[in-house]
Length: 516
Picture (cartoon, rainbow, N blue to C red):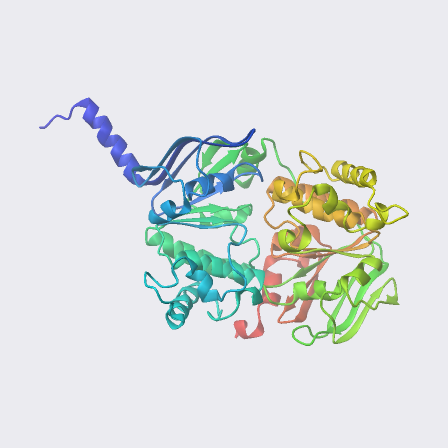
């Protein structure tokens, strides 16, 4: 019998543990000026596993992953990849270790083709010349693996945001990564598209790929992941097992308190119809759309990506012109030729992409809130009254509990949930009484979701008629009094009360050909 010295035994044990984990991060720290974004984060991810990283907006999740992918340089701590200590100072160094990251904000060029975006880092595959035929062929393979019919030569900017997200995912998968980081990858995908993505991620895991998955959707966490790490205020709180923990365990760890009810109690709406759409048609997609929203009512628009939900919102707000049909408000026919007309008629729109369509990221929070109604801040001579801007902004800051340093800070400095509150405040600063919310809690943590839901409830109590478009079925079910389900540009049906179930919504939402 051979005896192994105790010191060597300990070394062997440590080496075995290190081999078991693909990623080990110890006491990782990162500062931005006086802000301690990461105070002390520990993270261990087993090889060939899907590991969830959860926390409120601003907890440090994205910052930690940017450190791991070489975008940020850590200020302290230790990172080990496959047993080897690494010091990444550039994204290229991370890529050389076969690490891929899919950011919450798309890192794509809209003027290039789908194929060019997928292979942008090496269009010539090591050579001096670019073969369009080759990159199109390889891009099609990557896209086909995801189950999406996207033509490789299509200009990226011509795709919907959801399809652009699928291109971003294909971009990482085409590089044959060993470690894949996904930051809120399903925020703009439908249930059907999410199922396709999850099947692909499970297949990658089974092939030995290590996946870090960031999401605010707790149902996804339980459905997909093998382990959960919760971080709060730049520190690791706990590691949980999705097989044994509950949703409440995760939420309590994230927010540091008990969390009883996500959705507020529904109020009984008026019978007075505020908004009515009659036989609306567009040249390309929408056919015979008939919907209505009552005073104090929340009505949902459900359906898969491409069904026409956002197109209805765009018609109501004057972005897209209707081919035929009628839009009425308080019984009067409206003539909406552009967004300015919609605003004058009391209609507001919180768009699905707040960072591209809902806010001016580089401008102060103060300007973003007051931009929608310059009459309130203008003087007799048309010059902006800064004092009025400050007063109005601070009023909405208190009313919506917007967490910020100063109203003079750019809106880009805020977390996703607080950015969304600013965009909502922008429309509350107008005289609108019809508010359309397109994906109102996309990329927002559970605590901020609850706050936004309570804001929506408050608006209904004041008589607002609210139309909500959401890909989160539980959001539709939990918030709405009624929901219209769309499929292929048409209203497939209307659901009320207990009939609003995930099963019923998906049955109506799937294209008829998918059910054959």
